[in-house]
Image (cartoon, rainbow, N blue to C red; front, side, top):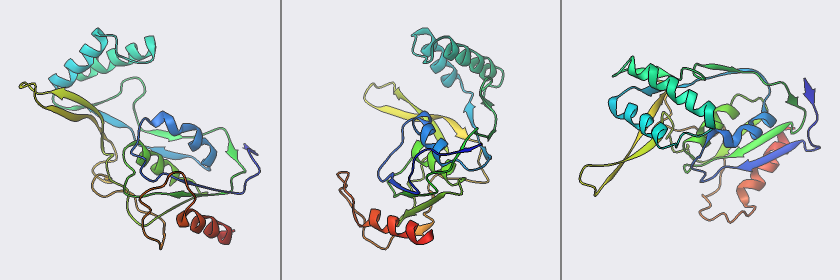
Length: 219
């Protein structure tokens, strides 16, 4: 189904210095730029005694989000982890690689430019992987992104001395080993021939004008 959303033919947004958050944050934006089905790789959970203890503590302390649904998810994950200690398991309820198929392809915007830089990491990079599957999208910048995505869902642990905190990932991407992102990053499709803008303050700078002009010329 194709439908109008807003009367803008071109759209340019910057993600510069966006270090991530949660994948749910960008879902509405991903819907706007969607053009065709694509495969999205899931993650695997490392089934160690420490990670099992982490989820058991989360359940005990009432820290699992999404109410009863979240509790069922955590309990199913724990059962799978306990059966495969030392290995990796997929989320028993929502896991598995997914073919992303949306109901609507919006007519507008027709072309989308996204400005990136080396400050983009984690969920911001996951959004960019989704954006690259859109025929509307062109990535602009002069650097690769940070390359911090293959190992995710980081949790903190206080070391026995009590003086240090270790943050480590619970999951790894099923893109590995064929398509790593860590220490590589995502490269722009079009290089912006201007120096890096260190302080943005939500201003329109030369980068934004470059992208606007480029999209207009593409049309």
